[in-house]
Length: 225
Image (cartoon, rainbow, N blue to C red):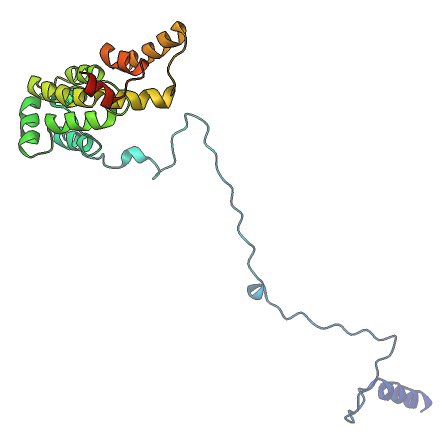
């Protein structure tokens, strides 16, 4: 009987206590473990890793990256190319023909194309001459500009008109160039020769250079003639 009582006491002592609503402090020798109910599907997926492939020189590009597989752009027409040039600046007929020469194909007629461009107002030797004079006249003399017009095969009538226009302003333009570079009358033969060479290289006539180096301005020159 004592054994049964002892066993009953042991079972009774191990039974869970009845909750009374008050918290019972945990024993120092008791350890509780919270179960982990997190499933694998709830865990954040691992971030993918990327590796940048490098092709050795000469290796073929990956599929779908071959640009040569794309359709080629249609070849630019000769007229389209000519209009592209003319949209940037004025050209003489001869200069534009030389510019187009490397792109002429068997069925192209350059002379006919240039005629069409002139008729449509895209190409004009007269406008080219005016543009050249405007760009060069502040720095160059008449002979230099006229020679450049001849190199571009501008018509003789346009060359004569340009020459007459430039001669009228030759002295004033030469004085502007001379003042910007020197600004004083030469005092020695060496200095005089240096100034004369500078003006001659820019296409000013000998008569114009002589007047400038003697200190003649345009009004004095006109009154002395």
